[in-house]
Image 1: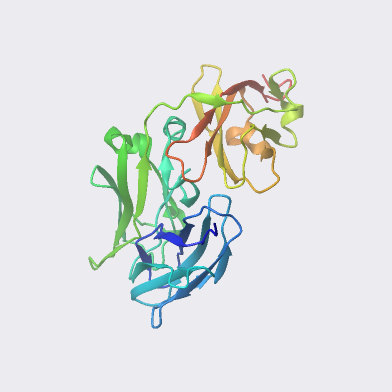
Image 2: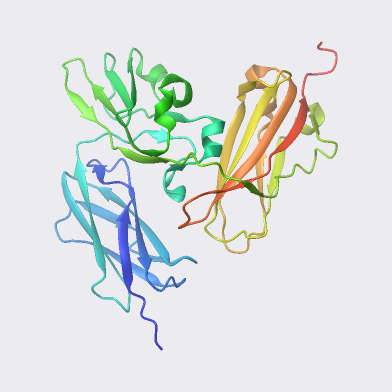
Length: 335
């Protein structure tokens, strides 16, 4: 029986784009047969104030193909997706308006459907307001986490005040990180009280406890479980490998530095992400030497590292066992 590669859905990760082309929306088309290697052709309806790139894309192992849409003027942009078997296809509409570039939320992206897992919550949630177009001294910027929490700050020096990091975990009410979906955005009000809104991100918070089923990451150089001055000198490699690794998996590796009392050191804490490609059986993340010298100084304590894996189409992330290493990067003779 011949399988026809019909389009079953077309979606956009952003409902409304800035009309000045400063941000793109990721459009996704799903083939109902979930067949990889199928070419999807994208087209903007005549008169629509937008552009897609690329004009064709190929489905991955899950039958998903993507492209990027940008806007060039205010209006509604309708984009169709078709295949050789489905000349009619399906369409999605995205509005273009006078909006500012969206905020960023650490470890939430289109690759993981803008979802914060329990590992992300434990790591700490941060949002960043970019240096938006037209920013001026005396602007008042209000950041919103849905209708649950907000914070306002003034622009006194554009270069110094933007980008602006918001510590969602500690600056906003704890209700912001309860299970649910939140519209995350900001509004800039200029000195004449003219407001301009940003693109809103739909952030999902998943607080269900995820069991650690994936193997712990490894640090080949730390054979004795210690990172010292010599090992940290050229940066530290962390290897991630698990049996089910497949193209499209989205890996987030967490690294948290802690002092001798087990208290988190912000300047020694970070995360990295990677999207698995065909042929990968492992991936090596590299952390710069500066991570082991927070605020320019070495430290004695420990580092805890783990990772999560988001499989396209899955509801919950997979989680690894944590690896704890001792850290001693205090130069000899400095005590």
